[in-house]
Amino acid sequence: MNYTDELRARTVHVNAVLKDYMPRAEGFQKTVIEAVNYSMEGSGKRLRPMMMECTYQMYGGRGPVIGPFMAAMEMIHNSSLIHDDLPALDNDALRRGRKTTHIEYGEPLAIMAGDVLLNYAYETAVRAFEQVPRNEDPAQGYARVAQALWVLATKSGINGMLGGQSCDVEYEGQALTETQVEFINKNKTGALIEGSLMIGAILAGAGSDQVQKLESIGSDIGLAFQIRDDILDVTGNAQEIGKPIGSDVRNKKTTYISLFGVQAGRQRVEQLSERALETFDSLDAEHGFLRQLLEELATRRR
Image (cartoon, rainbow, N blue to C red):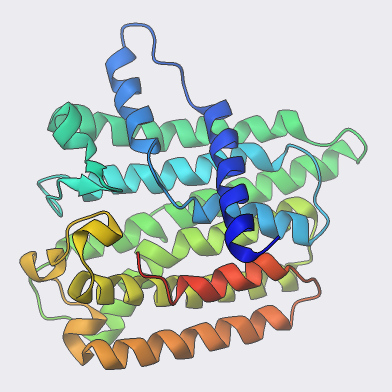
């Protein structure tokens, strides 16, 4: 199977996993659940749960314990997108080629949907305790799930994604240094990629040195991914990337591109990608598709 076919097949598989863990739209809270499910539908790339499952498989992981974490990570990512698109933040009307959640359901329900999805992610992740393989020591399996939960919480919290997002909001319209921009990008974008790679390896029983290397890979790839996103915001088109372009300029955000230009941004992406792949090649395990996926992220056009 070539890369494109495997990517398509893995995306279909991840979508099936997500569907199993989404809440049913019923009861008095039906409408907000519909908004939650709406935000999770569409043509999402599902990169984070896909990478998580790849590292799980790479270190010999088998069984359903990875499923709740795959779903939880995508829920956390989508909760951040709902809030990012709100009028108080980026004020975007298009996401993945569709109306954003606040355009479809209104701002109050969109705020609630983001909150619900973030909390439901942790409700989902703890279900992994029920999925610990029966053929291994339960205490060891539960310890791995607990460690994975710690990574999930840390990488999505104030010292991870939410920390980066809060600084992105606070410093909007201000002239920032390269160090400040890198802090925002590494946390807002890179933290969930780091966590995805780490959690898969943790649940499969990989050693701490391997987990640390994967964290480093995720940091470099996450930063490269965000710089590439900033390049697309300047050079792409809305129809191709599925969301409005020019939002960084409109919102007066300092980015790597506004500081150094597109060409320097492309060079930085290449440097980060090369370093990440060198670290990947030093791991004690191999996964051809994951390596190519990480490489493709830096050259994507959407």
